[in-house]
Length: 396
Image 1 (cartoon, rainbow, N blue to C red):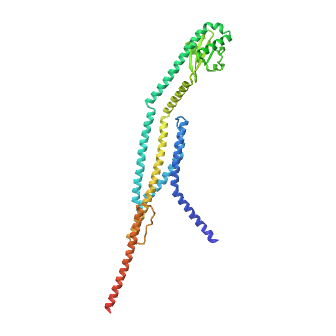
Image 2 (spheres, rainbow, N blue to C red):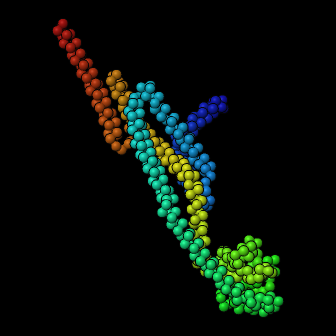
Image 3 (cartoon, rainbow, N blue to C red):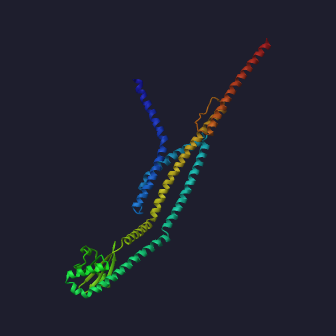
């Protein structure tokens, strides 16, 4: 019982040391995998957010997680590099070769990564300039001008037709304005004949004097005071809504009586007009946020590039350590052999390459030297005993 209580802290310390070693061994790989995964999710998150926000600046808080993991990974790599540098300062076996190998791996990973980052940024900048270049601007501008001219032409034609209808109704207005049924029938006939979607006669105070059969009083809410003002000043005015063209014509200036007419626009034309307006609006928003868009891309690309560079550097560190460790062991063993100790063997780590051959050859050489040394010692002893026996025989 006494021994058990004393050994519990000892085994607990061993367990903590074992866990600490395992954590320190797997921590860099865990950070690396987590950083790469977070970088990928951050890329798709920023891409999705930019699409939802239609090109507005994205929330860069999405980069906090990969940047934090990247910072921790930098600390781990810096710690390993400092350890290699301290080993070289101490003059440990293989430390110079180790540092040279790490330098080579660092250049082999950093230089291509930087070149790729520079050229990718240049190509991205050229691509953005192409997106917002004069040809694209001119194409959007011309398409918008064509659509606006098309709509304006239809508005003008509607206004002329409404003016003709007004000229037709003016001689009858004194009779029709007091006969609601007759005015409604006249407007319904004109609506069917000229393919209008709505047709009504009203005053400036929005009192309806007559309307066609398919016209609803709700349409009055679409007429503004500015429309009445322009119609009275210019004789008529037109306006394009979502899917309709409307005209307001002055019938009687003394009593402020107006003719309100509308026509449905073809759905395909209306859809193209709306799509063009949305495209131009989105393009203008993107152009205004162009600098923010470029900055977001550069930041994201730099983070991903640094993650890949850290991955390459850590892999390089692992390869260098795996290559240099047996070479350092061979150097230590060679120094031990040079001091006269032949009771040493270098442990083979089973790399399945020439390093295994080198280690095995060294061990065989040391074994042969040891056997030859033992044979030489035996021969020397035999020679010494033979010499002693010869001297004794000579004395006798």
